[in-house]
Length: 132
Ligand code: 5GP
Ligand code: ZN
Image (cartoon, rainbow, N blue to C red; front, side, top):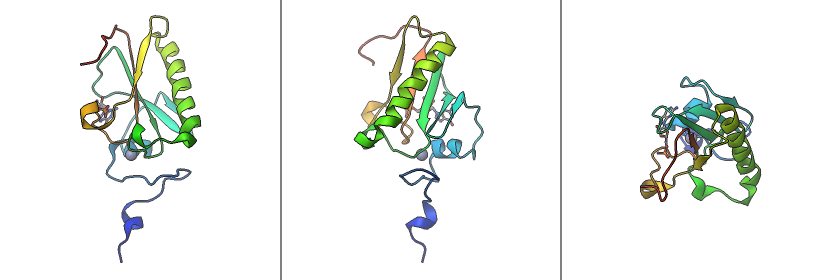
């Protein structure tokens, strides 16, 4: 009998199952091409396919976490790594000195279009507040 395990397989090392239909899971698994700026045991960083700023990088955990609404206290080390990587990339991209934005969208009204947790690192121009 075809069970859930036949369509959703665990990612190696991950605690949450990967989603075979998820575009970011497919990028993480190298099923879709990408040129990661950073690729380690828990996250990758890639340039956004439709940049909204001169620097627009996506930082995404390897694990399929649908959104920030699914994070728990146990994800603290992952989040620390995300922001450490964001700061390092901001320096290497030359946007650290003037400032930048790190944002994650949650759900439809939050503007989330890919249901795999990711953080936008954006810089190279000034941003208004509040966002539109
Ligand atoms: P969200 O709208 O969920 O906050 O952000 C999703 C982001 O992923 C968008 O900025 C979109 O341009 C980007 N994106 C969607 N598909 C791909 C893809 O296949 N490759 C890359 N590099 N970015 C993607
Ligand atoms: Zn995914």
